[in-house]
Length: 375
Image (cartoon, rainbow, N blue to C red; front, side):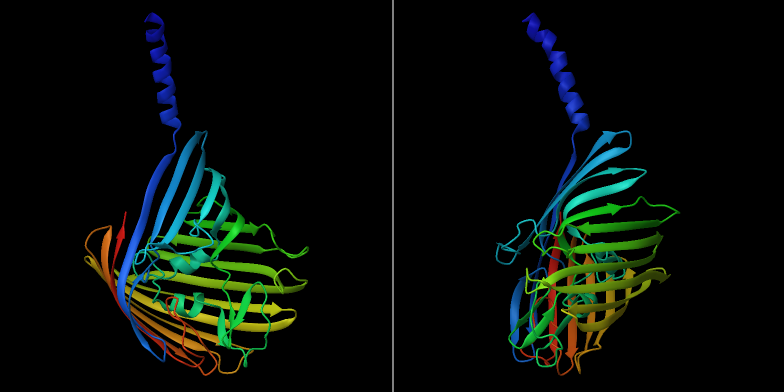
Protein backbone atom coordinates (compact mmCIF):
# COMPACT_ATOMS: atom_id res chain seq x y z
CA UNK A 1 0.00 0.00 0.00
CA UNK A 2 2.80 2.38 0.91
CA UNK A 3 4.48 1.74 -2.42
CA UNK A 4 1.23 2.48 -4.19
CA UNK A 5 0.83 5.71 -2.27
CA UNK A 6 4.36 6.78 -3.08
CA UNK A 7 3.78 6.13 -6.77
CA UNK A 8 0.57 8.15 -6.91
CA UNK A 9 2.23 11.61 -6.85
CA UNK A 10 4.61 10.48 -9.59
CA UNK A 11 1.70 9.24 -11.68
CA UNK A 12 -0.29 12.41 -11.04
CA UNK A 13 2.74 14.51 -11.90
CA UNK A 14 3.15 12.62 -15.19
CA UNK A 15 -0.53 13.13 -16.05
CA UNK A 16 -0.29 16.84 -15.23
CA UNK A 17 2.84 17.25 -17.35
CA UNK A 18 1.17 15.40 -20.21
CA UNK A 19 -1.91 17.61 -19.93
CA UNK A 20 0.21 20.75 -20.07
CA UNK A 21 1.91 19.51 -23.25
CA UNK A 22 -1.27 18.27 -24.91
CA UNK A 23 -2.29 19.72 -28.24
CA UNK A 24 -5.16 22.15 -28.26
CA UNK A 25 -7.32 19.94 -30.50
CA UNK A 26 -10.49 21.35 -32.05
CA UNK A 27 -13.26 19.55 -33.90
CA UNK A 28 -15.06 22.02 -36.14
CA UNK A 29 -16.91 22.22 -39.43
CA UNK A 30 -19.84 23.51 -41.40
CA UNK A 31 -23.07 22.11 -42.83
CA UNK A 32 -24.54 24.07 -45.75
CA UNK A 33 -27.69 22.97 -47.63
CA UNK A 34 -29.89 24.97 -49.98
CA UNK A 35 -32.86 24.73 -52.29
CA UNK A 36 -32.02 26.07 -55.72
CA UNK A 37 -32.96 26.35 -59.37
CA UNK A 38 -30.17 26.13 -61.96
CA UNK A 39 -30.65 27.11 -65.61
CA UNK A 40 -27.93 25.72 -67.93
CA UNK A 41 -29.30 27.43 -71.05
CA UNK A 42 -31.36 24.45 -72.16
CA UNK A 43 -33.16 23.18 -69.04
CA UNK A 44 -34.06 24.39 -65.56
CA UNK A 45 -33.43 22.08 -62.63
CA UNK A 46 -34.94 22.40 -59.15
CA UNK A 47 -32.50 20.95 -56.62
CA UNK A 48 -31.50 20.43 -53.01
CA UNK A 49 -27.71 20.87 -52.85
CA UNK A 50 -24.88 20.91 -50.36
CA UNK A 51 -22.30 23.69 -50.43
CA UNK A 52 -24.10 26.28 -52.54
CA UNK A 53 -22.59 28.96 -50.29
CA UNK A 54 -19.47 27.18 -49.01
CA UNK A 55 -18.59 23.48 -48.93
CA UNK A 56 -19.87 21.34 -46.06
CA UNK A 57 -16.88 20.05 -44.09
CA UNK A 58 -15.55 18.34 -40.98
CA UNK A 59 -12.29 19.69 -39.53
CA UNK A 60 -9.77 18.37 -37.03
CA UNK A 61 -7.04 20.84 -36.13
CA UNK A 62 -4.60 21.28 -33.30
CA UNK A 63 -1.66 23.17 -31.91
CA UNK A 64 0.84 22.15 -29.25
CA UNK A 65 3.14 24.53 -27.38
CA UNK A 66 6.67 23.09 -27.48
CA UNK A 67 8.24 25.80 -25.34
CA UNK A 68 10.80 28.51 -26.17
CA UNK A 69 8.35 30.10 -28.61
CA UNK A 70 8.01 26.92 -30.71
CA UNK A 71 4.79 25.08 -31.53
CA UNK A 72 3.51 22.20 -33.67
CA UNK A 73 0.30 22.26 -35.76
CA UNK A 74 -1.82 19.82 -37.74
CA UNK A 75 -4.93 20.17 -39.92
CA UNK A 76 -7.32 17.64 -41.47
CA UNK A 77 -10.43 18.66 -43.44
CA UNK A 78 -12.97 16.24 -44.90
CA UNK A 79 -15.53 17.71 -47.31
CA UNK A 80 -18.85 16.01 -47.87
CA UNK A 81 -22.24 16.39 -49.55
CA UNK A 82 -24.75 17.03 -46.78
CA UNK A 83 -27.69 16.51 -49.16
CA UNK A 84 -26.72 12.88 -49.85
CA UNK A 85 -24.25 11.99 -47.09
CA UNK A 86 -21.53 11.12 -49.61
CA UNK A 87 -17.90 12.23 -49.87
CA UNK A 88 -17.19 15.32 -51.91
CA UNK A 89 -14.25 13.52 -53.52
CA UNK A 90 -14.06 9.79 -54.10
CA UNK A 91 -10.29 10.01 -54.54
CA UNK A 92 -9.33 12.04 -51.43
CA UNK A 93 -10.94 11.71 -48.01
CA UNK A 94 -9.21 14.80 -46.58
CA UNK A 95 -9.63 16.73 -49.80
CA UNK A 96 -9.98 20.06 -47.98
CA UNK A 97 -6.45 19.96 -46.61
CA UNK A 98 -4.16 17.60 -44.68
CA UNK A 99 -0.89 18.94 -43.31
CA UNK A 100 1.43 19.07 -40.33
CA UNK A 101 4.03 21.65 -39.41
CA UNK A 102 6.19 23.41 -36.90
CA UNK A 103 6.46 27.11 -36.18
CA UNK A 104 8.13 29.84 -34.20
CA UNK A 105 6.47 32.96 -32.83
CA UNK A 106 9.36 35.01 -34.18
CA UNK A 107 10.58 33.11 -37.26
CA UNK A 108 7.36 31.91 -38.91
CA UNK A 109 5.82 28.54 -39.75
CA UNK A 110 6.58 25.64 -42.11
CA UNK A 111 3.85 23.13 -43.04
CA UNK A 112 3.92 20.08 -45.30
CA UNK A 113 1.08 18.26 -47.07
CA UNK A 114 -2.05 19.08 -49.07
CA UNK A 115 -2.71 22.81 -48.75
CA UNK A 116 -3.99 25.89 -50.55
CA UNK A 117 -1.31 27.57 -52.64
CA UNK A 118 -0.38 31.11 -51.46
CA UNK A 119 -2.33 32.67 -54.34
CA UNK A 120 -5.62 31.44 -52.88
CA UNK A 121 -5.51 33.84 -49.94
CA UNK A 122 -5.58 37.16 -51.86
CA UNK A 123 -8.48 35.68 -53.85
CA UNK A 124 -10.28 34.91 -50.57
CA UNK A 125 -9.62 38.11 -48.64
CA UNK A 126 -10.36 40.32 -51.64
CA UNK A 127 -13.93 38.91 -51.83
CA UNK A 128 -16.59 39.48 -49.14
CA UNK A 129 -19.54 37.57 -50.61
CA UNK A 130 -20.77 36.47 -47.17
CA UNK A 131 -18.89 36.26 -43.87
CA UNK A 132 -17.10 33.10 -45.08
CA UNK A 133 -16.27 34.76 -48.44
CA UNK A 134 -16.01 33.23 -51.92
CA UNK A 135 -19.70 32.33 -52.17
CA UNK A 136 -20.12 29.87 -55.04
CA UNK A 137 -22.46 32.40 -56.72
CA UNK A 138 -19.76 35.09 -56.48
CA UNK A 139 -18.24 36.18 -59.80
CA UNK A 140 -14.82 35.40 -58.29
CA UNK A 141 -15.82 31.75 -58.31
CA UNK A 142 -17.85 31.54 -61.51
CA UNK A 143 -15.69 33.74 -63.74
CA UNK A 144 -12.19 33.47 -62.27
CA UNK A 145 -11.93 30.29 -60.23
CA UNK A 146 -14.31 27.85 -61.95
CA UNK A 147 -11.75 27.38 -64.74
CA UNK A 148 -9.10 29.53 -66.35
CA UNK A 149 -10.77 28.67 -69.66
CA UNK A 150 -13.80 26.63 -70.78
CA UNK A 151 -14.10 27.15 -74.52
CA UNK A 152 -15.21 25.33 -77.66
CA UNK A 153 -12.55 22.92 -78.93
CA UNK A 154 -13.10 24.25 -82.45
CA UNK A 155 -12.08 27.76 -81.32
CA UNK A 156 -9.23 26.74 -79.02
CA UNK A 157 -5.63 26.95 -80.25
CA UNK A 158 -4.89 23.90 -78.03
CA UNK A 159 -6.66 20.69 -79.05
CA UNK A 160 -4.92 17.92 -77.09
CA UNK A 161 -5.22 17.51 -73.32
CA UNK A 162 -2.39 16.99 -70.87
CA UNK A 163 -2.10 16.85 -67.10
CA UNK A 164 -3.39 20.43 -66.61
CA UNK A 165 -6.25 20.54 -69.12
CA UNK A 166 -9.00 18.33 -70.55
CA UNK A 167 -11.07 17.88 -73.69
CA UNK A 168 -14.59 16.47 -73.69
CA UNK A 169 -18.05 16.99 -75.22
CA UNK A 170 -16.68 19.63 -77.60
CA UNK A 171 -15.23 21.74 -74.76
CA UNK A 172 -11.59 22.46 -73.99
CA UNK A 173 -11.05 23.18 -70.27
CA UNK A 174 -7.95 24.60 -68.56
CA UNK A 175 -8.02 24.06 -64.81
CA UNK A 176 -7.15 26.74 -62.25
CA UNK A 177 -3.88 26.38 -60.35
CA UNK A 178 -4.79 28.63 -57.39
CA UNK A 179 -6.54 25.97 -55.29
CA UNK A 180 -5.26 22.95 -53.38
CA UNK A 181 -2.00 21.23 -54.22
CA UNK A 182 -0.62 17.97 -52.85
CA UNK A 183 2.91 17.48 -51.49
CA UNK A 184 3.56 21.15 -50.73
CA UNK A 185 6.06 22.71 -48.38
CA UNK A 186 4.82 26.17 -47.36
CA UNK A 187 6.60 28.82 -45.33
CA UNK A 188 4.45 31.53 -43.71
CA UNK A 189 6.25 34.54 -42.25
CA UNK A 190 5.29 36.21 -38.97
CA UNK A 191 3.33 39.46 -39.21
CA UNK A 192 5.70 42.45 -39.36
CA UNK A 193 5.50 46.23 -39.83
CA UNK A 194 2.09 46.39 -38.23
CA UNK A 195 0.30 44.06 -40.66
CA UNK A 196 2.55 42.69 -43.43
CA UNK A 197 3.15 38.97 -44.03
CA UNK A 198 4.32 36.68 -46.83
CA UNK A 199 4.09 33.05 -47.95
CA UNK A 200 6.29 30.87 -50.13
CA UNK A 201 5.46 27.37 -51.44
CA UNK A 202 7.26 24.62 -53.31
CA UNK A 203 5.58 21.41 -54.46
CA UNK A 204 7.46 18.14 -54.82
CA UNK A 205 7.47 16.95 -58.49
CA UNK A 206 5.95 13.56 -57.67
CA UNK A 207 4.48 11.75 -60.64
CA UNK A 208 5.95 14.16 -63.18
CA UNK A 209 8.57 13.56 -65.86
CA UNK A 210 12.18 14.37 -65.01
CA UNK A 211 13.00 18.07 -65.34
CA UNK A 212 9.48 19.39 -64.74
CA UNK A 213 8.65 20.93 -61.37
CA UNK A 214 5.13 20.73 -60.04
CA UNK A 215 4.30 24.05 -58.37
CA UNK A 216 5.88 27.21 -57.03
CA UNK A 217 3.94 30.04 -55.42
CA UNK A 218 4.30 33.16 -53.29
CA UNK A 219 2.26 36.02 -51.88
CA UNK A 220 2.60 39.23 -49.87
CA UNK A 221 -0.32 40.58 -47.82
CA UNK A 222 -1.06 43.61 -45.68
CA UNK A 223 -3.89 44.15 -43.21
CA UNK A 224 -4.77 47.18 -41.13
CA UNK A 225 -8.23 47.32 -39.60
CA UNK A 226 -10.74 46.78 -42.40
CA UNK A 227 -8.16 47.42 -45.13
CA UNK A 228 -6.60 44.49 -46.98
CA UNK A 229 -4.21 44.32 -49.95
CA UNK A 230 -2.54 41.26 -51.43
CA UNK A 231 -0.41 40.23 -54.40
CA UNK A 232 0.47 36.68 -55.43
CA UNK A 233 1.75 34.43 -58.19
CA UNK A 234 1.57 30.75 -58.97
CA UNK A 235 3.62 28.72 -61.46
CA UNK A 236 2.65 25.13 -62.24
CA UNK A 237 4.34 22.78 -64.71
CA UNK A 238 3.41 19.39 -66.04
CA UNK A 239 3.55 17.34 -69.22
CA UNK A 240 1.53 16.36 -72.28
CA UNK A 241 0.29 13.75 -72.43
CA UNK A 242 0.06 13.23 -68.67
CA UNK A 243 3.41 11.70 -67.76
CA UNK A 244 4.81 12.39 -71.26
CA UNK A 245 7.76 14.44 -72.43
CA UNK A 246 6.34 17.74 -73.79
CA UNK A 247 5.93 20.51 -71.21
CA UNK A 248 2.82 22.36 -70.09
CA UNK A 249 3.09 25.44 -67.92
CA UNK A 250 0.47 27.73 -66.40
CA UNK A 251 1.37 31.02 -64.71
CA UNK A 252 -1.13 33.14 -62.76
CA UNK A 253 -0.85 36.45 -60.91
CA UNK A 254 -3.37 38.38 -58.85
CA UNK A 255 -3.63 41.79 -57.17
CA UNK A 256 -6.57 42.20 -54.79
CA UNK A 257 -7.84 44.68 -52.20
CA UNK A 258 -10.72 45.38 -49.82
CA UNK A 259 -11.47 48.74 -48.18
CA UNK A 260 -14.18 49.95 -45.81
CA UNK A 261 -15.28 53.26 -47.33
CA UNK A 262 -17.93 53.99 -44.67
CA UNK A 263 -18.89 52.05 -41.54
CA UNK A 264 -20.31 48.73 -42.77
CA UNK A 265 -19.84 49.61 -46.46
CA UNK A 266 -16.89 47.97 -48.24
CA UNK A 267 -15.58 47.86 -51.79
CA UNK A 268 -13.33 45.10 -53.08
CA UNK A 269 -11.92 43.56 -56.23
CA UNK A 270 -9.01 41.97 -58.03
CA UNK A 271 -7.08 41.81 -61.31
CA UNK A 272 -6.06 38.33 -62.45
CA UNK A 273 -3.89 37.84 -65.58
CA UNK A 274 -2.74 34.35 -66.59
CA UNK A 275 -0.94 32.55 -69.40
CA UNK A 276 -0.62 28.93 -70.44
CA UNK A 277 1.66 27.11 -72.85
CA UNK A 278 1.15 23.54 -73.95
CA UNK A 279 4.02 22.13 -76.03
CA UNK A 280 4.80 25.70 -77.14
CA UNK A 281 1.22 26.71 -78.06
CA UNK A 282 0.02 29.73 -76.01
CA UNK A 283 -3.33 30.54 -74.45
CA UNK A 284 -3.51 33.83 -72.55
CA UNK A 285 -6.25 35.61 -70.70
CA UNK A 286 -7.11 38.06 -67.96
CA UNK A 287 -9.97 38.38 -65.51
CA UNK A 288 -11.11 41.10 -63.18
CA UNK A 289 -13.74 41.38 -60.45
CA UNK A 290 -15.27 44.34 -58.61
CA UNK A 291 -17.65 44.05 -55.68
CA UNK A 292 -19.29 45.75 -52.75
CA UNK A 293 -20.85 44.65 -49.47
CA UNK A 294 -22.87 46.35 -46.76
CA UNK A 295 -23.46 45.18 -43.18
CA UNK A 296 -26.20 46.45 -40.86
CA UNK A 297 -27.11 44.77 -37.62
CA UNK A 298 -27.25 41.02 -38.24
CA UNK A 299 -27.74 41.36 -42.00
CA UNK A 300 -25.50 41.88 -45.01
CA UNK A 301 -25.87 42.21 -48.77
CA UNK A 302 -23.20 41.85 -51.42
CA UNK A 303 -22.92 42.36 -55.16
CA UNK A 304 -20.06 41.66 -57.56
CA UNK A 305 -19.30 41.54 -61.26
CA UNK A 306 -16.54 39.66 -63.07
CA UNK A 307 -15.27 39.56 -66.63
CA UNK A 308 -12.98 37.14 -68.49
CA UNK A 309 -11.14 37.80 -71.75
CA UNK A 310 -9.04 35.25 -73.66
CA UNK A 311 -6.52 36.69 -76.12
CA UNK A 312 -5.93 33.65 -78.33
CA UNK A 313 -9.56 32.62 -78.87
CA UNK A 314 -12.28 34.47 -80.79
CA UNK A 315 -15.50 35.23 -78.86
CA UNK A 316 -14.40 33.17 -75.84
CA UNK A 317 -15.08 35.71 -73.07
CA UNK A 318 -17.60 35.56 -70.23
CA UNK A 319 -19.20 37.98 -67.78
CA UNK A 320 -20.74 37.13 -64.43
CA UNK A 321 -22.94 38.82 -61.84
CA UNK A 322 -23.54 37.64 -58.28
CA UNK A 323 -25.94 39.01 -55.64
CA UNK A 324 -26.51 37.75 -52.09
CA UNK A 325 -28.34 38.49 -48.83
CA UNK A 326 -27.32 36.95 -45.48
CA UNK A 327 -29.08 37.03 -42.13
CA UNK A 328 -27.11 35.89 -39.08
CA UNK A 329 -29.33 34.22 -36.48
CA UNK A 330 -26.16 33.84 -34.40
CA UNK A 331 -22.39 33.72 -34.89
CA UNK A 332 -22.79 30.12 -36.05
CA UNK A 333 -26.08 30.00 -37.98
CA UNK A 334 -27.09 32.05 -40.99
CA UNK A 335 -29.72 32.14 -43.70
CA UNK A 336 -28.70 33.17 -47.20
CA UNK A 337 -30.37 33.89 -50.52
CA UNK A 338 -28.38 34.38 -53.72
CA UNK A 339 -28.71 34.94 -57.45
CA UNK A 340 -26.14 34.64 -60.23
CA UNK A 341 -26.04 35.09 -63.98
CA UNK A 342 -23.28 34.09 -66.43
CA UNK A 343 -23.21 35.42 -69.98
CA UNK A 344 -21.03 33.36 -72.33
CA UNK A 345 -19.88 34.56 -75.72
CA UNK A 346 -20.36 32.21 -78.67
CA UNK A 347 -17.34 29.99 -77.90
CA UNK A 348 -17.32 30.26 -74.10
CA UNK A 349 -18.74 27.67 -71.68
CA UNK A 350 -18.18 29.08 -68.18
CA UNK A 351 -20.23 27.38 -65.48
CA UNK A 352 -21.85 28.18 -62.14
CA UNK A 353 -21.46 26.44 -58.77
CA UNK A 354 -20.22 23.21 -60.33
CA UNK A 355 -22.79 23.16 -63.16
CA UNK A 356 -21.85 23.78 -66.79
CA UNK A 357 -23.85 25.10 -69.77
CA UNK A 358 -25.46 22.67 -72.18
CA UNK A 359 -23.16 23.92 -74.97
CA UNK A 360 -20.66 26.73 -75.65
CA UNK A 361 -22.44 30.05 -76.06
CA UNK A 362 -25.24 29.19 -73.63
CA UNK A 363 -25.84 31.47 -70.64
CA UNK A 364 -26.10 30.15 -67.08
CA UNK A 365 -28.29 31.31 -64.21
CA UNK A 366 -29.19 30.28 -60.69
CA UNK A 367 -31.15 31.24 -57.62
CA UNK A 368 -30.79 29.65 -54.19
CA UNK A 369 -31.78 29.96 -50.55
CA UNK A 370 -30.24 27.97 -47.74
CA UNK A 371 -28.96 27.55 -44.20
CA UNK A 372 -25.31 27.30 -43.15
CA UNK A 373 -24.43 26.16 -39.61
CA UNK A 374 -20.87 26.31 -38.30
CA UNK A 375 -19.77 24.27 -35.29
